[in-house]
Length: 175
Image (cartoon, rainbow, N blue to C red; front, side, top):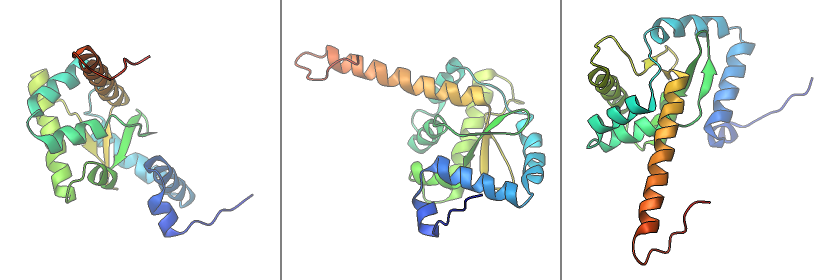
């Protein structure tokens, strides 16, 4: 067996997936994994897998609220797949940092706006875009994460195409 020693600063400065992996390894080594998995399913049970069209509808509902838009697209980043049924987990602190919000309360407000927007898009008050565990994670369905990433990619491609078609544009089309 080989061991590695990391300083708190090295862990803090590591990319989010590395920090999440370290967190998961510590949880597993302390025998807390079964407790964490037991905490996730009640929240995860109500999550729905959202399509790209669902996410476009949610985006349309929150379009004027830029912090909520930022949080939505943060959830398009790769997360950690966890539990049965599988959910994608994102640390609330990472969302806070990447979306440049001031506190977790703002993150929670944005996530609740996303939940509310989905209930309006689906016309079903029982659907949930995201849930939470007791360890500071936001949970979404894996298909929802893929749909958000696809929506972002589609928007970027359209933006590049629009810029390339403008007269005098210097932007080269994507290869």
